[in-house]
Length: 239
Image 1 (spheres, rainbow, N blue to C red):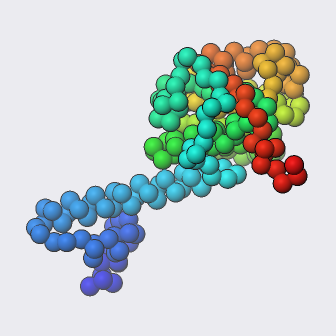
Image 2 (cartoon, rainbow, N blue to C red):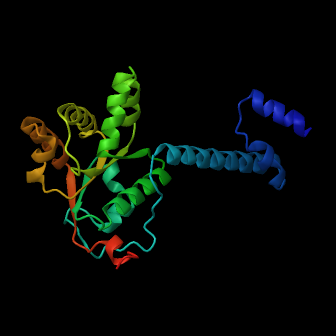
Image 3 (tube, helix red, strand yellow):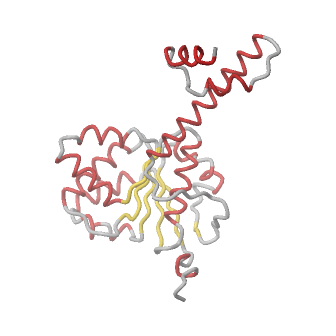
């Protein structure tokens, strides 16, 4: 009987977890059994989908808000810590800009919010700015640009880390402009940077592109300023 159930499950393309779930359910009546089975299958499917989204997110390491301190972060009046944790900025199609020195927790918070977004059923991806540019350029050279670009803009949240750490060439700046334009008022961005807005032209080089990118990012953004000391320096083995 178990083999026949497995065969029918495969034929009907039902969740593979069925074969493991149904023996664990207590049986009182047909209605209760059917409800509990469907509920368990739905939970299993949601968990599997979350795993796939987490794998596709490209996080270099998983981070959470457990024991994370907001003490050194200057929050704007337009958003609260509770809003961040609930990732309401994604529902509102707003952006977050994390500004501050290296080691102050910008990347940690960005990834943790990305993880929370995925846990709430949303799609999120992480890239350093140069990593994304390199992937866009490679996709263009391989004739796969449109396919890769469509995957990027399907995300509800795109995290661009290390914004402005290295100078861009003109093509890189233009490609990032295309991404920013597609996300403008449609999806959400998180940018981490140690550069003031007035210095962005120094790594984007093209003044017109800089103005266009800034205009689209700032319009619906919350600026969080990280004033704390470097976590890595405080916990370095080379003190």
